[in-house]
Image (cartoon, rainbow, N blue to C red; front, side, top):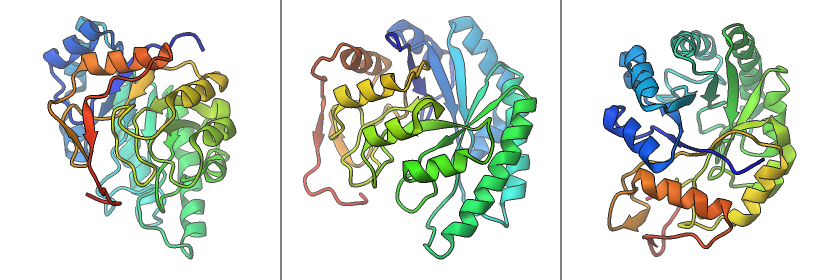
Length: 284
């Protein structure tokens, strides 16, 4: 790919005029809409479309809600049918304002080894149904790799999930892989990757840190992603506020994301404003 455009998820950010303007003024052109279930149900899609048009931000993708898992889970036989119907309702509203890519978690967790075959089969069946119905609306379902015991926690299982329907594609989250090398994962899933969730981590658990704050080799990973033929935005998925797992003296800004992306694209050392917490365990 040529030098990528830069994108940023709305997760944890207020969807207002100030946010859209701060994207464009910093050189961030693409947005993923990512909100919880309640916020999605109250969302004014027409207002978001107006803000995007006025600011010239491109609404690239929409992260379908994935919690609470007692209500939404495409791998749970008791919830999967209703989950597909719920997702299709949101997809109809979002495609109406021009969004084409929809991120879906293939499961909740925990999943025991004994339950995994059933959950995998259920997820495949309902991902195929969702992909078909979404395609009729001009939408693409992008299955996200997940950590720990979730489905899609390695390239082999992701490819198994994607095999359910020819229209399925993948969202590569760069801080979710705990059982496989990131470069190996990118090489294996290859051109099925059509969108990204960029963030850093310590290989212990997902952290959603800014690249440079964790242990990912970004020169190596960026080269691997380019080698897949990826042509979408370099899209970050983390909030402005500091998470409990790391120390920063201030909140991040859109300018921080733009600078970080350009440093990665140019192969420069990454500017780091955070300090790692000593003795950080699996959970904070």
